[in-house]
Structure formats: C-alpha cells, structure tokens
Figure 1 (cartoon, rainbow, N blue to C red):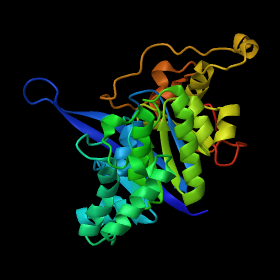
Figure 2 (cartoon, one colour):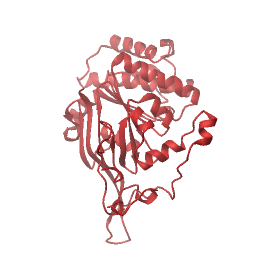
Figure 3 (cartoon, rainbow, N blue to C red):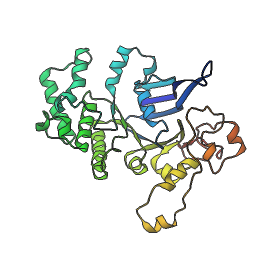
Length: 332
C-alpha cells in the first residue's frame, strides 16, 4: 500500500537562551527528538501520550508551521522540508489541520461561509486552485451539509454556534481544498463526551466518502482505539511503540504502554476490580535535558543497566508480530 506521509527522524528543538548569566551553554527544549513513522493512503494513525510529550509539535512540524530542526517529511513522495515557501503553499493543499480548540481556531469577525471559503479564495488568488465565486459558494454549502450543518447557517458568526458545531465548521474548512491528509490535533478533547462520539463518527464517515488519511492526535486511549487503524505511543518526544490497534491494545510490549493501558478505566466492574494497575514512580523528566539513556529509564519498573547507557531503537522484536515495533531492551 502506498504511503501518503513518511516522517524520518524528525526533530524539533526550541532555543530557550543560555544557561547561567554570561557565556553559558545554549539551552534547548527537545520537544520532538527523533520520530519516524508512515501513514498509508486511507489509513488512520493514532498518536497518543501524556500531555506535553510532543504530539502537537509533531503535527505542526509535519505541516511546517514549525520548521523542523532536522529530519525529513515526505507528503505523497515530496520532501516538504526542502521546499520554498511558494512550493510549500502548493503542497499544503493536500494536507490540512483540524485544531484542538473550536473556540479559538475560528475568526469571530467572519461568517461561517467566509471561514470555509477563505482557503479556496487564497489559493484561487495564487493561481493554485481555480474556482469562480459561484463555484466557491456552491462548495461552501456542500461542505456545510457534509459535516452536518444546514446551509442556511452560512451567514451566522462562530459565537452563535455550540462547541460541537464550531468544530464541524473547522472540519469543513479543512476539507475545502479537497486534501488527502488531515492532521487532527486533539479535535474532540475540548468537547462534551456526548458530542465527542458524534464528531468521531463524522471523521469516519468523511474518511469513507473521500478516501482521506488521518494523523489523529489524542491523549484519550478510548478515542484512539475507536478511530485508529494503527497506534503510536509517544513519551518525552520519542515513539516508544507503534503497531496495529488490536495488537497494541491486546498485547502491549513497552512498559510505558502497559502503564497507560492499565490506567484506562474498563466499564465492566468485575474486570476492573481484578485488573492489575501499574503505578509509575516520579514525574515526567524535563524535556530540556539531553539523554544517553532510554527516555523512559527514570520511571521504568523494568529498567536494566543497559537502559542507562544507551537508547533502544524502534524495531520489530524477534518472533514478534509483523509491523509491531517497540523501543525497549527487554526485547531482542
């Protein structure tokens, strides 16, 4: 199966000044520190992890909203990290973002129709996406109905909608240029649980109708399990484990993945009462420190001497499941 997205050794380090008062070393925040994965056409990859582990930074670096410190990002075979601003503008037609907060991601001074039409108008002016005013108006109405909004609401402003409706507007805007890949950055975390299910089902319906691929970011394991084909588990700027959704949830390999899944509630009270919880000691270390050890070393209940001196590579273990990768010295 062809890949729509390939990310190779992506790093995003933010400069934070110097240590000390005068002449100290440069200080960086290592938000993303060597991430690699791919997404096939029509596939959903779920990216899950604790808050602050670098999930949203990965999405922004892929979209080149942050120019990566190093690494490569290939969208449909084209390297985004080597493109000029004009080339990047044309390439971004095939990749759009749905942001986390539907309240701050929409311009309060613009009507719904203006918000959804804006990408088409910008690309029309640049000569990349040719559409007449009547074609744009017709597509706005089509997109509103596609995401479950009446076309008669097109002259309303964002403050006249609920949170779920605003997110539907954000999804319609992302679909305006008919992209192949959607980067969904925690798109349901700010919504009520009852509305979350509706938006997740909307994502699935749109994917089936338009053949879209998703990078779906969330910290909720239940959301990721429902929406994803494959799942990547991230910790402190690194991917600890990546594999098929069913394999990863039923047979987790990395100690961090096991701890995450053990903390997720199960609706059956009998199973929940018998389940063994894995309690991690300590807090997440500072992302401003570079490490020679495994990034999970400080909190790992299974740490060994070799974990302190080197970092495990993300690979398929011997006798492991195909395409189920883990970065852990417990597996050869």
